[in-house]
Image (cartoon, rainbow, N blue to C red; front, side, top):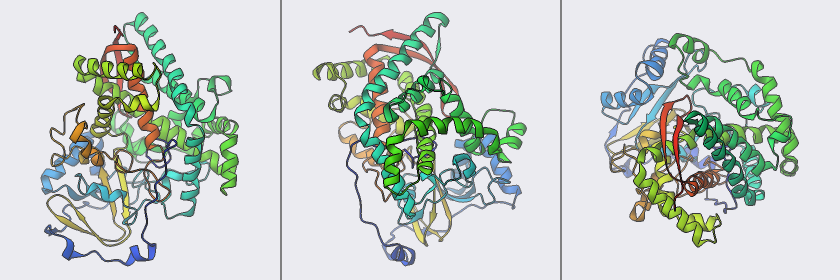
Length: 504
């Protein structure tokens, strides 16, 4: 939920794991041991260019001249290294210090999860932090480091929310997404195609409100306005790091050079806040018990639900349809057979037990998380001098340097994954399960769990479950489907062009 990224939410009734942590005094003074490093030590290549001019040039390369992926790939080739120095947008005037050390392979990337080595304070959006005026004046959970006392209190609150509402997740998801598929069928019948994104936005918000808070937005003053209010509010926070597809000079001047005034979205935000305050009384009571004010708790619930969770569903669900849709009828048939068989064997009921008996479906979704993770950018500031290893070299990092990882390159590392650029639905079946430790979309390995002491996404298991439910609902209804895919600032724009009703 709250410590994912522009993308995602909570954990259900699963046990919390607490791993021993090293005392901060020991972490800050412990030197790295050169003797334990078997790789040659190399100076981090790259530079940041001329002050002010270099960051702006890099920003234009990142957004417009090269594009995000090529921006990194071209520098890997230039420096013959997956670790190098580079500027990360937005740069002037929003972010005064855009300098980072990029970690772009599957071996170096995981240091960003090690809170004994890196600090995560105020790094949720990278080299800049949006104004706290957009979150009620509070630094919300996503921006807190585990060393800060309030981090533990707020993360416990999110765990409480998930555990207390876990039995509502499956029925409310089925209800909300039954409405979605019915609406998509009607639109297909009248127009010949149906926009998945708009329908998904409304279904996602309705589901989150109903399952987590027991409140139906359409029965309140919020009505159907939730998704559009959220999108406007998110734009004010994330526009400095998004490519919005506008003419480059207009987009760069308005969105990448100056901050949008929070006052322009205050009225919209207040409508969302009022909805959550009125709907989350039982959670706010628990917050007070934990020593968190009701006001601060509500702002955190809003952020976790609207940016992390709704944002994650808005980004990831269309991508799931994109990758499965492109895979073709053979995979569709295999998924339909597996899902329907498992549900029939479970008394025609969709439960956690039934879902666990769908190995291909689970592997397919892990592959979607791997090939296009919903949280592509990760940051961490070195707590002390340390050595970071790639596959070929070790690099000395100084205390205070900002480390950055571009996850889509780390999870498509050819030294870890065969055919890394291909969507391979059965990649994680059988022996392939061993590769799950390299699936790290949740700010941590898939083989580990969120805890009070780490920054792994509170909602890792929640997000995994609802993603599986989407695929289950899809193939209980349909044998196959066809799509058209476009681009959007957050992921893919998917249009359905056919839905073939279930025939067996």
